[in-house]
Every structure is written in C-alpha cells, then in structure tokens.
Image 1 (spheres, rainbow, N blue to C red):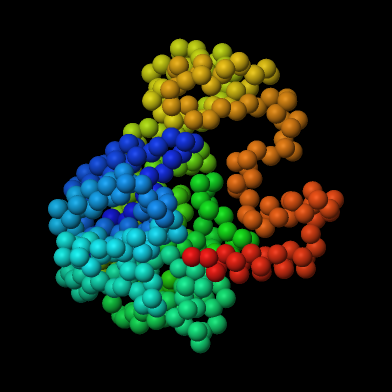
Image 2: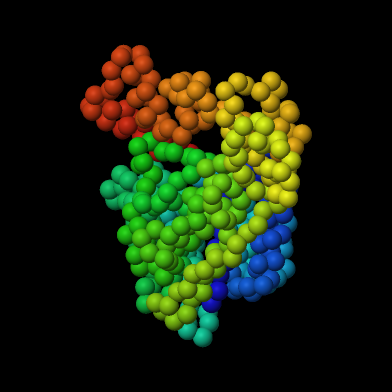
Length: 379
C-alpha cells in the first residue's frame, strides 16, 4: 500500500512581505502530477495546512481546489491541524467530506480518529492525532500525570487502543527530540515542546509535520517530509521533496522521495556590488527569476542599493552588508536574530542589560516555569 506524505503547506504565507500564493499554487499542481504518476492509495497531510489560524480567503480557496483535485483522482486523504491552524476551522465540514474521501481530524477530545484500508497483506490503520499541548490532553485524562509533551502524546497514544499486530500509521504534528529546526519555525520556551521519539516505537510509519527540513528521527520510518517550498533563507540549502511511503507485509516499509522544483527558488548571493551586477555573473542563471538574499561586501553602502539591484534581481527580498563596519557592530543584534531566540533567552538578555549580570539558576527556573504555565494555558 502506497501513501504520499505532505505537511506544512503554510498556505497564505508571506516571506519577507512577498506573498507565496502564486508559488504555492504552482507547487500544488506539481504535487498533483506526482500523485498521478505514483498512484498511491492515500495522501497524508500532517498539519500546518494554513500559515495562520484565520487564513485568507485566497488560502482557503487554494486548499479547496487542492482537495477537490485529490478527491477527483479517487484518493483517500487524511488531514490534521497543526499549531498554525485553528483545529475548529480545519474540522468544519469534515463529516460531510468523508463521502468524498477527505478525512479531517476533528478537534481533539480525548480520542483520535482512525481509518482503515486493506490490501493483500491485511489491514492498515491510519491514526490522526492533531497538534496537542499537555493542557489539551490533561483536560480529558485528569487522573494521569501529564507535565510534558512526551507525557501528553504518550497518554493520547495509549488511549487509542491500537492493535499492534496489524500495520499502523500515525499522522501527527509535534517536535520530536533530536530533530533540526529552521529559522522559519516557532521556538518554544526552553525546548518544552519536545516529544521523545520512543513514544512512537510501535507504529509502522509516523508521518510527522511541524519542522520544515526533510529528515528522519531515530529511525527511517519516523519522518518529517518537510515543506514543499522554502520559507526562509535558512532553508536555502534544502532539497524539497514529496515523501512516498510503501507498506508491504508487517515490518516491511520502504521510504523514498520525489524532488520538487519550485517556480522560484530562495537563493543567497554574496560579493561586491560590481561583481553581482556584471552580466557574466547572472546571465544564464535563474537568479533574475528567484527570490534573492544579497550580502554585499563593499566597505561603503551603495546609495539606493536595493532599488538598483532590483533592476537585475526583481525578486530581491533582503539586502545586507558584511564589511568592517558591520562586523564591528556584531554585538548589536538585528530583529531577525532576536526572533530566533526563545522567550526565556530574550528575558535572560533583558535582565542582564538591566542589572549588569545574568539571572541566577533559581530565577531562571522560576521564569521558565511561569512561561510554560502561561503558554500551555493558551489556546
């Protein structure tokens, strides 16, 4: 039995104030062609379908068209909400869509939806566990001690009453310990959102969403497929793809990828203004069509440099300098660097600036505990 694993579409996303809708529409058409070539039995979409909990009308229309295209090809689609999605909005109309083969995980209520397909080797059970926090799960299991994300996910899985003698797939959206983040992903307080990979030991395949870089965690069959597009320049070196999963008899799982080529790539260029504006540098490349981050090495700023460079690179997203002046000012961190820090790191930095010394261990532990209780209590 064959499945296509997708996640983190982030429909409606803007990157450096550029709308990605055209690029997303293009890549979804590419995915449909891969589906037609591969002819899977199902498509697994592991959350962060939208970029915001209240998506734009254009993003909703794009998802609507994508699901219709999949349904017309006779596929079973299994979709969960991620931390960027509103689970209530994602679940709306889900029961009506069942007859079209579109299976959307309902809002978590102590149980996880499960669907079953069959082939010559028996049954395959697809379990849908949307993004959950400890506070979500604790609500339905007050007798359990649930203090971490690992506790929450383990408790939710135990409640599924899975028949481990048969083949089981889990579609979920969490940060598994040991995986690698990108700049475009949310950072939690002190890494508290991590789930130990051992929670998934008994599943034949775990279709993960949340992290943007394609990767496996612990074993080949616990996998993040990654985003279909690059959503930050920290992903410039990624090779985006669609993950194809084939299940044979129990214990026999094959995983491979099919590459995705975007309408426009995200590319980082570095050099002097003179070098980057030479016709020989960019002629015959895709740079004029791509999204570009340029780092100029000139010692003097180029007057109106962004506008001048956009004559050659019309999709120039970001321009900065690396020279003696900027290196001397490295201690003054840019806003983007601040966004990479966790809330606890920002508080620690602020405390040190105000008091001339870092927080003590007791203060840091208190601050982390307070942040965790506030963060977990939000919905």
